[in-house]
Image (cartoon, rainbow, N blue to C red; front, side, top):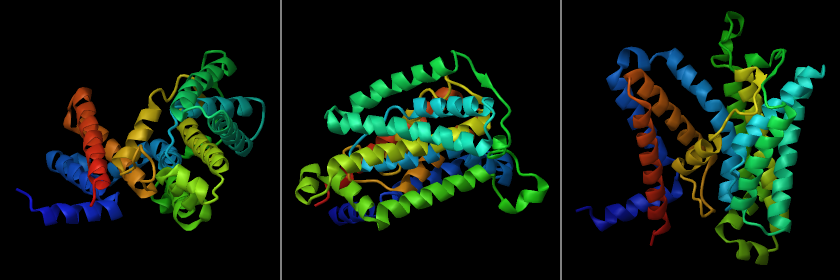
Length: 326
């Protein structure tokens, strides 16, 4: 039997560092696959490839982390990413440059998030319902713009964001897209922990009535967070376009589940007020390690799904453990 003092100590550690449990899980899973396939899994190139595979989910998860900490949810992330790829391809096809296409795609995503936030705050509709509707609306809009087919276009250099580095750029160590993830995550973490706006996000997620009594403009903060989360999904869409080099309205189906799972695995609480950018990135990378490890080990896809689902349940159990602290 585990001594009560040990349980209390574990609760204090998990409460102060919600990312610690996911980090331990990541190390354990990595070591298991390393022991299973040491000759291939631990190669430097494999680590770089896993980092590349994590970028889209990781960037989108930074925005979802802010939303979930605030006590919200966004089920439209996958549709936003697909719509962004279509917007970028359409802008490039019109003759605009790559920078204009990137900014245009991100602006489209941010505008969609702003609209979603306004519906949630002004009409007082549950975020689950609004974003569920937005998921279908945005997917349909992407198909309509693309005329229900992929938009083939010259990527004009955008395809280099996740491409293998040429010898003259080997000093970067990893593709630019990975550095974009690091930069976005760093800015998001600074916003959350070092600004008044970030403290307002946590306050609303912890207790919205208390936040109102403290004079926080809850509606304004919520609207801005949904717009910001959508803009980050737009950046993820730019990276996804770099991988696809086409505008694909059918892309990223189910991506929102991976993004939400990353936040939950990383210590985020769906009840709000709890979570971290670092934890969400660890969660995203953990799922990539599981996918890659299962592939290297020759395990079927259903095993990967069982392992990922089990980790999500364990993460939720740890969240309950933190919530029951004395």
